[in-house]
Image 1 (spheres, protein in one colour):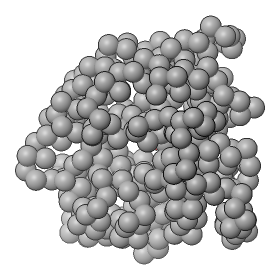
Image 2 (cartoon, rainbow, N blue to C red; image 1 turned 30 degrees about the vertical axis):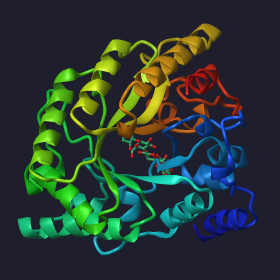
Image 3 (cartoon, rainbow, N blue to C red; image 1 turned 180 degrees about the horizontal axis):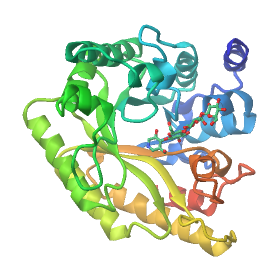
Image 4 (cartoon, rainbow, N blue to C red; image 1 turned 120 degrees about the vertical axis):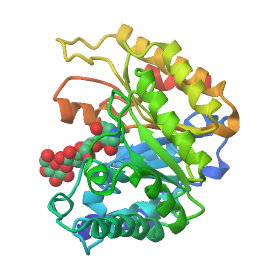
Length: 347
Ligand code: G3I
């Protein structure tokens, strides 16, 4: 990867991607984040950022927070027990610093994306404890002061509100969740720490189970700043009232709320599909409703919104489900969609 890394660094040094965000105001209508009181983030694919100049231009000019879509996951950062790979991740850190963008780390602990060495590890319980602590703290220390916030634990709950039987729960017991937050905080006390999960508005019993555990841990002094409500939604679901209820419940419990991983599917059931203006307008209306309900929450708890990809071309939905869909703010030609315009109007 040495050539692409150097290429990106060179581009940054040449100033092609290094705008000064603090000088921009909402009067500059070409920038989305400039209109917003809270951060507007995007999940970034490092290869696209390096090789696709239009993609890079959008990331540079529209967003003031970046989440690495895959580059900070365990398989990428910690591919072998005694090996951490910082090269690519550090390129992103430099890029965000130069471009004055906040970096949201995703994710320290997850049941998925495990490298073979974790799946096959046969140590004792205390070996697992050591491995777990070392994984979290080595990463948090490396990025201390450069990554402002972390998804510490991702998707630890089943849909019925019980804890997922992940490898971490099997090896460490249910207390792995609180330990993860404590270890992350010890290693970087300045970072904001989040629990992140999906279906929290569609599934109130899952949400209540998540909130019950997070409140309980907080009362016992575990440092949890906020909750990431993943927004992999569609124009058909969830109901707006259900999303509003979820946002209110999370913030009434005193947690910062990150509307994380936003994409709004037009074709969730993979039916025969015709892209129409009517569907794009329904997507825009959903975005508007989300933006308005989010802005009714207490400002200090509005951590921000993050979109799960830049343009439709790069959406995980297409590659993971092999379905025709158009879930993001920019279309395949990198043009803004009605969803983008409606969001900007509401900010
Ligand atoms: O980079 C390799 C490439 O070298 C290889 O040729 C190709 C062949 O399949 O795979 C590529 O890696 C893929 C990677 O995305 C980059 O495209 C992985 O197979 C694929 O599993 C991976 O999917 C990611 C998925 O998480 C699993 O980690 C998606 O991009 C990413 O959008 C998705 O994000 C998750 C969040 O982290 C958590 N919440 C749900 C969300 C959507 O699933």
